Length: 119
Image 1 (tube, one colour):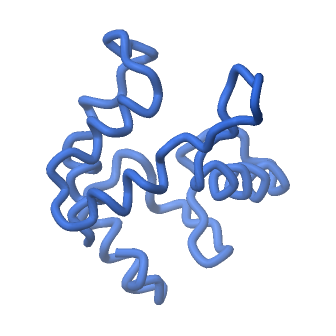
Image 2 (tube, rainbow, N blue to C red; image 1 turned 120 degrees about the vertical axis):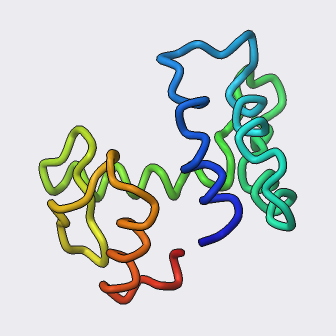
């Protein structure tokens, strides 16, 4: 598993804050999540960096990962999924895994389903 995914999974309780952000904006919180992940850190931060809006626009246009998230949400909503922990791997709903599953369970599942490139 990549350093970034392993760190995020291991430290997930630090990021599940019910909206408590300690005065940081979304990008600053995302930066905190990837600090110390090793060689992947710069590449991950580049994907999370806000895309500037048009001149005079107050908000930014998301980041390079925004469309990926939009597609994932659209995919799930088309299948009637509106809350987690419903998981799809390679288009197949997997009811045996969820947010409470261990990193070893996720790795075993993904490798067994031919999604080893994800870990």
